[in-house]
Image: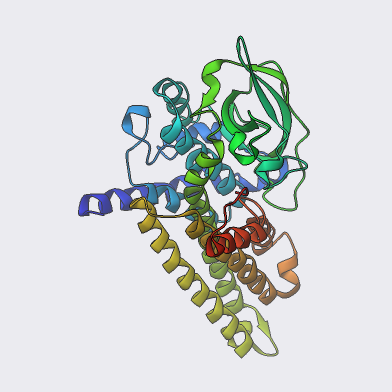
Length: 386
């Protein structure tokens, strides 16, 4: 980036930190207890310019470098707001880029400015109760009729599902074509035939709502199709690198935050007449966490550079997601261990870092699926999994 880009990045970094400290930190425990964040937060983030950081100005964005959005995700996670990080990743780092890259001018005009202002909250619905990451087994159907498309089916584990105003829905439009029969649709959640199940109760990320969504003969207009019919799987592969960069940013941020908490604790906590941090085991554990973070960041920055050049592949994304999500769980577990019994209490923030991290090896593609993607690239085989 140029000097002016560096200046813009520094400005955004300061603004992101201040916004989180002022608008999120004082209220986050309440939102965790309530299981949802208020819509007013999204509008505040929009007013601060944090929902369209790399969106073109014509759609209400700042036109900054996309890496600043990744920094926002990292900083949200570093401050211990894992639920917000996941919700933000879906809205600002996944759904908005889908619209920008694939949508028609009319679709962009309708949704993006409102999303940048925080007036419309976005979600994306791929996973199904009995299909998971296997897109070829998808049951949700969209069939043409005189008025456009008729949508039937259900999705599960949808982040922002309880509050979303618009959902990108993956549906089969050709049941005989496997993964090549998948199309994407922009679903206005105010339409008849759309409904939500009860909020799914999770072990972590409580402030981020997760829902099951239902489509019962939901009539969509013809222009609800996002991109070309039957190109859904190709679009998913096209956009996955950025989605998984977002997951990597969250992993790096949460590891940095957990390490900072742990360093403070082991310097003050005493056992057997010395600080916990003075034990060789503690020092070696902390050294290992620091080394992992720095190695992980090096590959993350490598992928950011490749993404900026349009060269980051789905295999690169799978390697990044696999390594950083597994590293995150392993290292935050190691940090919690140094807190002893206090680490298992809600009184100490390290416990939230721990439960919030656990989903990282599951969502956005499980570690097992990441290994399958990597292996198939080595063996020259195609994939029907995202």
